[in-house]
Length: 253
Ligand SMILES: [Zn+2]
Image 1 (cartoon, rainbow, N blue to C red):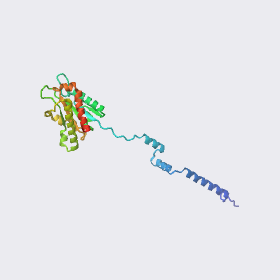
Image 2 (cartoon, rainbow, N blue to C red):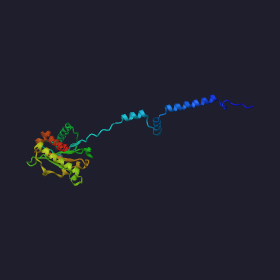
Image 3 (cartoon, rainbow, N blue to C red):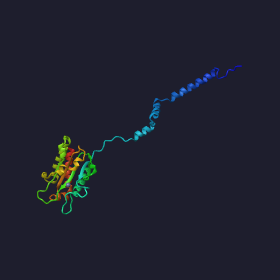
Image 4 (cartoon, protein in one colour):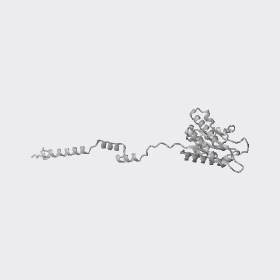
């Protein structure tokens, strides 16, 4: 005896039921399908990227680009921090190191008041290595000797730079020197004393430590002996001469 099972038999009700289910599934797919969403799912699956909202939050939290602040002008307080080497010393105990430091701090304060950043560096400051800035000035003073002819100031730039084939930096260092000489003479009334520029000045250690394109000079602001009154009692005048020279250089006057 054979029986026909109901499932194997074609019936219009069964056909309608299956067609209806298929139509519902297709409708659900087309209602929810978004190409962008598919792409996001794909991306998340491929690289484990966060979902849209997380990405937006990450983008908003990321720092925005800002131009770097201008580099600081370097001011070396000669002999500062150099243990056992205070530089020239007077019979009353006044040292070159303390005079240089007082002037350096005044220069820094005035430059900052004018909107320039300036950093005061020790004689062998580790920050001198590779120092990069618009200018570097090292402040020193000369011997504390009471001798008529030992009065005045001088400015020197690197002898090595003059031998090097770097015309642009040499020109800027020369201009820095010219600006300082003129402004310092005007501010202090001191005469330029060119005959005592020594190798200690032209072969000054910091010249070979700083970034090669940073224009640098060393200034001997006067003799602690004959120019004692200016250097010890009127450091603000000394500082003004240096600041005026730097402004001449930086602002191209
Ligand atoms: Zn010195």
